[in-house]
Amino acid sequence: MWKKRLLVVARILVCFVLLGVAGAFLYNSKEYFGNQFGRKTFISNTDVSSLTVDEAIAVMNASEGFSVEFSKDGVRQDIDISAAVTREFSKDEVTQCKKSSTFQEYLFGSEKDYQVKPARSLVDEEKLREILERSLPQATAKSEDAYINENFELVPEIFGDEVDFDRLIADITEGIGTGLKLDYKLEDYYIMPKYTKENEDIVKVVQEIDDYSEMKIEYEFGEEKEVIDWEKLKKYLTYDDKKIKLTLKTKWVDKFVQDLSKKYNTYGKTRKFKTTKDGTVEIQGGILGWWINQDETAKQLRKLLKQKKSKTLEPVYRNVAVQHGDDDVGDTYVEVSIERQHVWYYKNGKLKMESDCVTGKLTKDRKTTVGVHRLYGKQRDRYLGTIAVQGYRSFVHYWMPFNWDGQGLHDASWRNKFGGKIYKSGGSHGCVNLPPSFAGKLYEQLEVGTPVIVY
Image 1 (cartoon, rainbow, N blue to C red):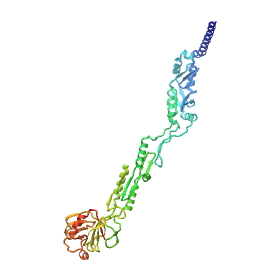
Image 2 (image 1 turned 90 degrees about the vertical axis):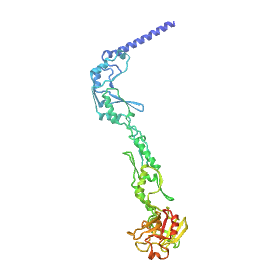
Image 3 (image 1 turned 180 degrees about the vertical axis):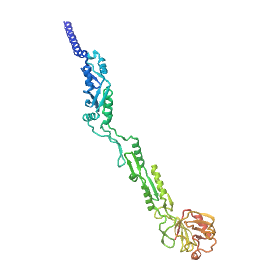
Image 4 (image 1 turned 120 degrees about the vertical axis):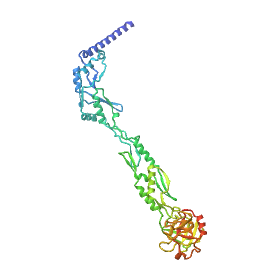
């Protein structure tokens, strides 16, 4: 019994299937045999479903329903741009699309998508821009370049979602001419930052800033120091955001060195000196003293800045003293009193030797030059002066020059008396004459650079 019922049900189902196939055949064959495209047919981005070839060409040439697919963050959107597009297609090629369709495709309603290159295409770019700007999602942020701020800190780039419509429209215009299906990912058309933090020029500038920030140039003046570091350097740094270039201005270097000279130069200045017998006196001039060579020191500093090198150093000097500070003479020196006609030699603050002497005669061309001088050489067994120029030629065993006037300490074997008032009438030509035995001992004690104070 149940077998008969099952057979009846099967026959009914077969009938329904046959009726369905027959209905589909009748429904779709009407288009097939009527020279129409199937119900899911697209040619070059235009829906030509159920249209004849002539109707399809008319619709395609008018760009009716011509849409382009866009996507942003995975969300897809079709936008009709037909108002901005004019195309012209070949009837032969459209006909060929129709001929390539099979009855089975009609029968089962298969979707067909043909790409036919138009014989001619024209795009109104201004109207297309208007459509896109109106229809596409609005930008939420603009892209910004990475840059160096006023504190010389790197501010990273910002990636926005503003669309580069010029580039997008150019690609759409080109795509329309191909007849292919058009779809665009908006992320590919965002206006990107021109400079990112990985940009070669930006990376170079950041490295330069790091180099400058780690720099430390120290000029030593005894216990005092003058420091050039990041706090000073950044005042003279400029950043050109157009050329992506960092520049350290160096005009300030000359003024910096000038200020060092004003503060630390002692050459030619008046000094207070505590004498052995006459209390504290003021002595002006002399060849001992710190004298910065401004041109060479500025050159030295500019070179370090260019190389971005840190260094502890001294300026380049034209002339030097014994030590830095208020007392640049120190406690090892030769003291010469013109009035007392006496010489004292102190070493490390202790009196080591003393003797009477004879200084220059008190005339303009022969008097001994007062000042804080320094021994700049030592020489044995030589002649001083010439008959033709100085009017004398004297042989000495110990020559110790101490100023630029050609004056120095030396033995005077031709004298049998020293001290007293001899210098007033029979003084030297400016040198400090010493007893031979004392001169020899003093010569052995003195080092080049030892201060010689004459007052």
